Length: 191
Length: 276
Image (tube, rainbow over the protein chains, first blue to last red):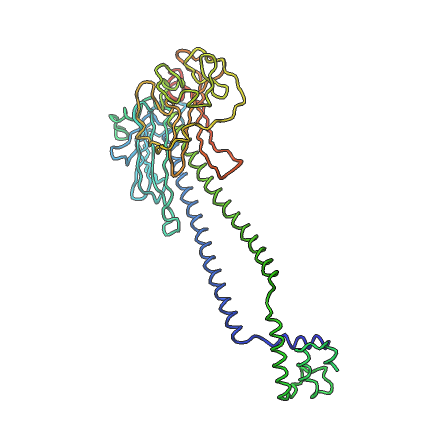
């Protein structure tokens, strides 16, 4: 008991002012370092989330374009490469898409597919935050081979400032005439 | 006295001395503040300095060396994890690029007319310089024809049924070692309508530079053993695209991406009996 009380008395002798200041300075350094690390880690997580959002949006847009192009019987890329007309004039019941024409273009920052079914048209926004949209088509003898390129960024102000860039090549499996031969074809405007 | 029973430790002894003489019964010294004499205070200070000097002796050389070794092991372990992570990330990026190339090439094959696809890989007038066993070690001669992994690839010839499946491992295309490679062409740049010269079937092998890595793209159109493809072919054919690259820092994982699809004249509109 006496030993305990005597040791306690010694242990409670405390720190000197210099020791306290050094300890505080070290603690502040550690805290600032931890804070920097925390902010960096947070930015990485946010950037990763932004990238996932952009990739998912890009994949969704490409999937919808692919389902449109895959069953096309006619494709027309505009001269400046900013518009793609996808037509389907097949009468086969094997083709499930009733859309007779779909024009893909950029309206502001929206990727738009304006579909025509019969005599009615229906503009639909496929994706937002899209820029640098361009289409290119291969020449003869390739049947319906087009490449679409665009950048999508749906997280403005996020850390993944560049967005996701898509460069996808798609082919129309039902086309038996090359895209180049379709240049005399007016696409959606003929409907 | 208490002092002697505390084994002569300076710090405790001095504290106890400070309390002792003024308290006949020193058990509860914390409740009553004792009067300290100047000489006892000096003893306390001296004793404190001695104790402090003892604590400031620091670490021995062996302790420092051992601590350094432990620290180095920990740091090296983390470095290994970091490097592994970077290598795996680079590998994932390369594999993603290879997959994209494979998909793009397969789309190019799909976009070719059936009248081209049905000729297979070795039609009359084929000027494919890569269609030799030296340029492509994965092509094996069989009789008067050629095979790829047990399937006939010159389906236009009559001798298309003599392939046998042998257990051969994939051989890296020789063009991987070439220094000069070009980026893969965009769809708008794929225009080569010279007879018998339709990439990616002819030439069926090309090496592209993407980023700082070279990727070899090989395309094979194969039929089935025992099926006659001569003249007016309406039988399904298989398209196989193999993209190969080299990643020396990742061991035990494949460095090629393979994608396969079946092509039929119905899909390509080459058979009027299909309804369209």
